Image (tube, rainbow, N blue to C red; front, side, top):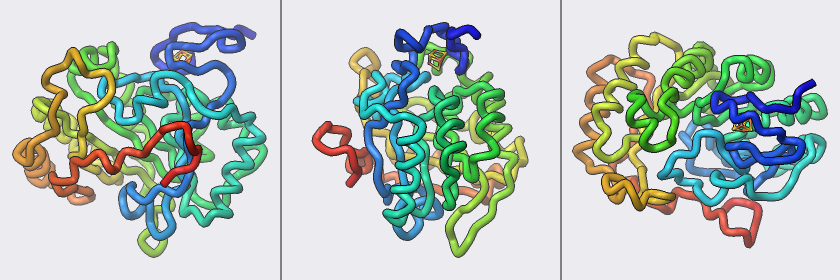
Length: 291
Ligand code: SF4
């Protein structure tokens, strides 16, 4: 069997048994941080917090990544699938309301092994940039209860500018279309099954945001839409002058008003004033747990 990795749309072809791919990962799962996260949507963080696991590395690599320290290289503690399964159980013991896998798409085979060792009793949330191949998502689907996909860019020009990938929307729209078909089920206010499609409004990109909203409205899916306004300048943005500021309340309102005009009632919207770096977890190496 070939060791050449073509797991994600980047298809970089790395032999992950001996080298790292364009996502920064080799065959060993690395976890940069885990813990109970209080700042997801209320139905995800719920009462005790979302049992969040931040994986090192990323296949999409947005210039302004809010988790830049861990996404550029697969940093973190190495985990075997067995150890990952133990972590799922530990988060359950900590009282987590769910297991929230953040940017794990470059570790799908290892996740499948972990789930074969231990299947969590609480909902499993798959939190992704959506630059995914459908085959990988379909393989994971039986183990996922709630999808939290980002839908970041509509325009190939914009995705090329910020990630070097002009085919983002081509892949992400298929991936989100798949994830968004799931019916939403709540238990006392906690989402136990379903999908929330997230979109972060970027400075000077509101027209792209409107295209995303229009596309989502036409999908007529049961999914919720979460419009995020907390863009904070960080990451590798020196050559992008437009990314050096937060979005304005006017930019956020423009997209939010369009969302309402499109009749999207299943929506989470934020106060535009929430553009604050305090919601970005600290990935400094002093501790592996969150908060
Ligand atoms: S998952 Fe990583 S190694 Fe595999 S094709 Fe994508 S970028 Fe390359």
